[in-house]
Length: 394
Image 1 (tube, rainbow, N blue to C red):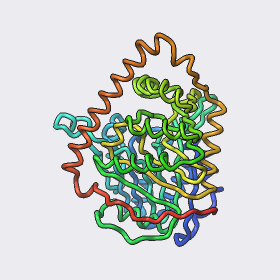
Image 2 (image 1 turned 30 degrees about the vertical axis):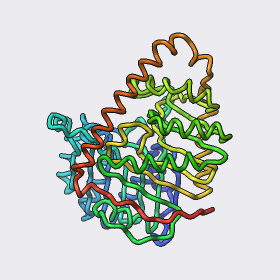
Image 3 (image 1 turned 90 degrees about the vertical axis):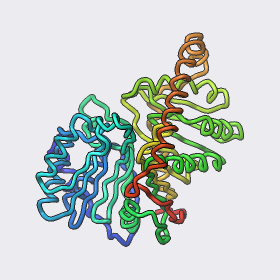
Image 4 (image 1 turned 120 degrees about the vertical axis):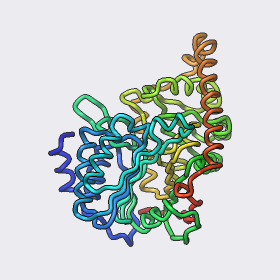
């Protein structure tokens, strides 16, 4: 997408709704998310808070740098946190540019901090503007998230939230106290280092309660045995379980480990498709057409040791849009059958090797998560949200 087309989308986008009214919108990739995010930054009056794992210096990244710099120059308080691993090649340059414009910037755990045992990542993708509009999900800032001619963008989703939940989100960044209840169709979870188990429990709860359907689209799918058993149990009790997983990946070894799980899942009746048109980067699941889970949290061991986000949505319209998104990608993906998982190469070489990788990653991440949880910095700790979840048809 060229700058002119982005500008056109910004100019034609509807104006923000009142902060007193809750609004939830599902955004398909950067083509939908970036114009709305940039517009929010351009309209910022008080403050902008951005946390992102991977931040590109060029392309759409340069437009975010300009928008953040312009906001700071007109007196808006701009704070940015970039992960030192995800933005290893561009982070220092971006930070220096933004600081010159008056932004407050932190690079979280530079690569060299691994030498002193600091390995955890800030994997969150959050943009919060004026405590009135927030964007959360799996989308980083980079041109890979936009369609360009024959290039298909990475398959990913974000969620835009407007209303009182946004003010609550800012308080969650810094406080460990429980916050007052507000009536909402959302629950927002943030976890500090080592706190990903709470988000894993939200997935387990949703899967174990499902009665009709479970739909999962995860680019990095390497669940622990309990999650696998829960999905298998759901399929065996008659729940339609459908997984959309990565046929291509920017981290190849994870796909090999994931495929070592296929045999057990298929034997239980789980339907598996692989998306191959581009990199699948989404982290989304729905159950029974009534609950949506979306955020930066992956069903893999590493997310147990990262800073992550998860949003639970009980809004029939938004859940329906998420299921339509999954169905659309399923129709263009490859169905996995038991024939290919039953080959000698798969059973005698690839599955055992993938299993070894899976166990190694799981053991390493659990050790890291336990270690980080014991010494978690207070400014990155987050209390359990106490937001009641109600159904909404808006």
